[in-house]
Length: 161
Image 1: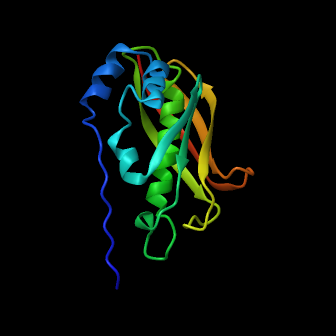
Image 2 (image 1 turned 60 degrees about the horizontal axis):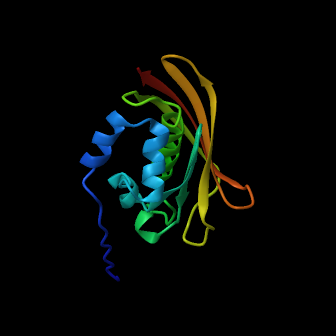
Image 3 (image 1 turned 135 degrees about the vertical axis):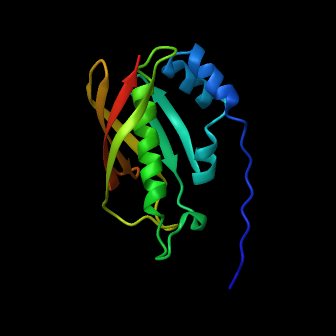
């Protein structure tokens, strides 16, 4: 049995939390994207990165790595769920004003294709299906560059204004 070691660093999320109170969600994520604000530590842990931001859309990338595997040799469903939940939440966040926030009320994920280290680089594609004053309903897909869907999620979010 071969032992492996993974070392990574992250920044204290306090800066990000403080800025979230002062900036719109869109501006906050642009700051993360351009490196002036730190990425959330959870994303460092799961090997996912914010790669694009526009109003209504935050795109995250997932590179499959063996340290993300479950007991059957595929990326753990919890990792996939976290990436999709993050894409959904951050896509909604791009529409919120300074001081506004949200929480996920539910998350349903369908795992459609196994993800392994042989899988291509994957990214999220998220759509806001409905956004009202207090709730929003979104979907996100984890896809490869050719559009093959590896996982699909839907979520209802509660908005705090």
